[in-house]
Image (tube, rainbow, N blue to C red):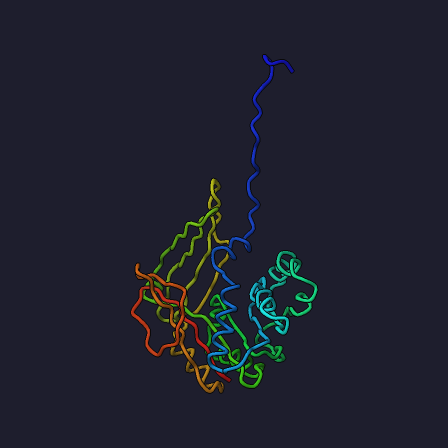
Length: 274
């Protein structure tokens, strides 16, 4: 090739592979921080160290993997009906752990409403996953099952959300380093307290991909949930409320309280003691 005929060659960069579970993790989850919160709350309430965690509706079971990393004595159970996210977690998370850590993560493709859930010091239901139960009797059945599967002195931790923003259709957009994350509420029915939600993603330089995850939930209130938990036999419940930063937004710090704040949108944890 002579200098006269040589052409400039431009390298082409292929589009990044769209990985919905990876994007969800980056946009929504912080399992390494979450497991520290669970341990702190348990020690705060029970004055001892927990060792066995069960993650209901576990999906890719990221919480399980982070829990066993905290201590060689820790063991985790992940429960989910959907085999797809479980297989993803095995390939992308479990495979990167040591052999010893892998042995302390036990996964079950199972309905959390069925009897025989693994015993644990802490059971968690995160990302509002249990909102999928619309009827009171079904939620009561799940809470009963959880209580029966907790060790003596165990606790159950749930997250919940609400606020006036949840009474109407809205879309929240978060700009992250490589993509945009869209949380879209498609309306609210005050008679049934049901609402539908979608998660959309848009990679930089690419078209928006809609309805990557969809949810059909009942918007349970904190008093409803606490009353149900105590009705099935939990001896006490606590609310951990998120604080606010100087801009009036959530700061990720949760403290125990019996009085919340008037917020357009709030997130809280309920902790139930067996």
